[in-house]
Amino acid sequence: MMGLGLGGNFAVAQDVAVEKKAVAAEASNDAEDALEAEYKKIKDTVMQTGKDFMKKVAAEKDKDKQRDMYLNQRPDHSAQMEQLMKLADAHPSSEKTLNALIWGQRVFKPEQRVAAKKILMDRHIHNDKFESVVNGLARSRNEPTATFEKIKATSNNPRVQHAASYVIAQRFIEEKDTREDGIAMLKQLLAVPDIDKINPRLVKSAKEKLFVAENLSVGLVAPDIVGTDHAGVEFKLSDYRGKVVVLDFWGHW
Image 1: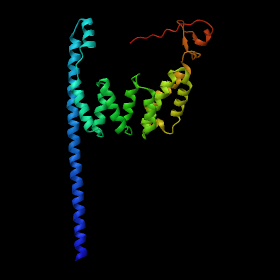
Image 2: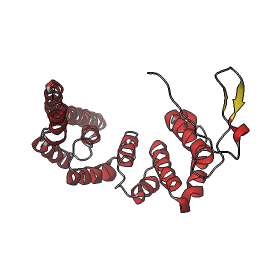
Image 3: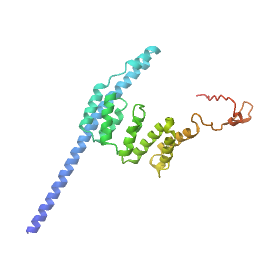
Image 4: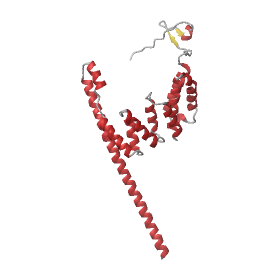
């Protein structure tokens, strides 16, 4: 009887533990849903204000006034973005915070962008979505290459590593002293097994960048171009090697 009693107590304890875990999970989901709703409220306010402003700009017929309005009278979203950062500071590890901070990169003021980057790098650097963070940071020429080197060395996510490598290679190619290193990095990136399946968009961009670096950079021989003149006679760019040639690319849209 004692054995049965102990077994029964153990089963009850297991049931209680499972129930507590289920309640905790439900509470966590509710908290995440509430957090997402708060972020959505902020985003919707900012987006609607922006739409209203652009309608106002479009309605202005005077082009000079329209330009001045667009450059100098944009809506101030400081209060909303400060609220967003307070939520992010309170819930730094949440996936909802990751999504909100990625969106906020377009609206943040410089100091907020720095704070957001710290949260993202400290808490979300291994997430697939961090690739979007890398691409966003790459659009700023003020972001040092060291940032992307740190991301590449720290993240255990292949997509994030590849995105950081691509940015570093781009930066290297733009500088004369590191140009060859950048080209080598792109070739190394394209040689990663299955990268065309992991990130086909990155592969396309890397191939285009590599072609330009190896064929269309200043100081290189221009690749041969074949066309026809007004009489339908075929000619090649190489036919005029040694002469001054003006290439005029034009079209209709």
